[in-house]
Image 1 (cartoon, rainbow, N blue to C red):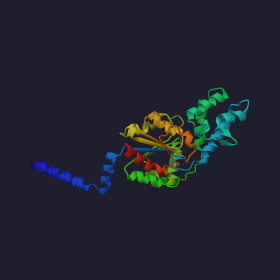
Image 2 (image 1 turned 30 degrees about the horizontal axis):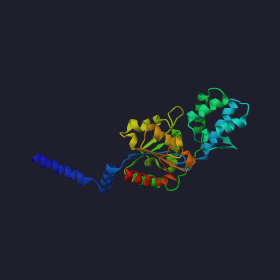
Image 3 (image 1 turned 45 degrees about the horizontal axis):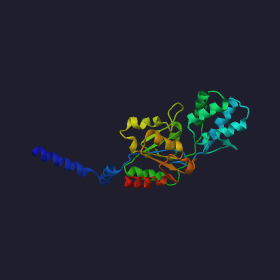
Image 4 (image 1 turned 90 degrees about the vertical axis):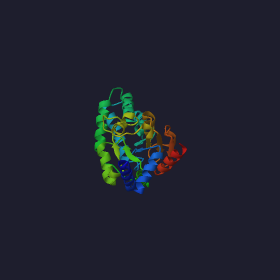
Length: 266
C-alpha cells in the first residue's frame, strides 16, 4: 500500500513537471488527425527558381545536340520548350525525370536514359540557386511546429541544393526531415520517395499531409495513400492542372487553416 501511495506521488510530480505548452501539444496531438506535413520546396516554400527553367532548356538543347533530329523546332515543341521558355504543363514543366526520359526516347528514337540521368545531375550540381521565401511561409512553418506537427521537405532537388537552401535561409532547425532526389533515387510521384520517412518514423501514411505546386506532388499522396494533398498556386502549375489535389489554396500560408477545417470535419 505504501508503494502504491509512493508511486501515485511520483506520478503526480511527473505530471506537474510538464509545462503548459507541452500539455497543450499533448492534448492537441490526441485529437488531431495528422502528424507530419511534407512540403515541396521550389514553388511551395520558396519562390519558383528560374534557374530550374534554365536547366530544363539546357538539358533539351544538349539532348538535341548529342542526338540530332530532323527538325529541332518540332522537337522543342514536343518537349515543351517554346520561345526559349518552358511550357508549364509540358513534360519539361511538370513531368518527373522518368517521364522526361520517356519523352526524350520518343523524340530521338533511342534509349537515352543513362545519358539523361547523368546530364541532368551534372546540370543540377552546377546550378546556382535563388532561395527566397514566399511571404509568410516561414512563420507558418514555425506555427505548425508549435502546434506539435512534424515538418519535412520532399524535393526533386539534389542534397547539395537542399543544403544550400537551408544554409541561405538559416532554416535547418525548421525541418525534422529532408528528402532530396539524387540521379538514381526514387522521385515523386513514386511512393518509394517517402521511404526515408516511413523507415525512420512510426507514422501511418494516412497521418501524413503533402503540400506542393505540381500534380506530381498530388499524385504522391494518391500513390502512397497519404491522408491529404494540398495544392498551392505559387509555383508552375495552374489550378486546373492540380487534378489530384484534395484542396487548392493560393499559398502555403493557408495550410494551418486547411488542417483546422480538416480536423473539424473528421
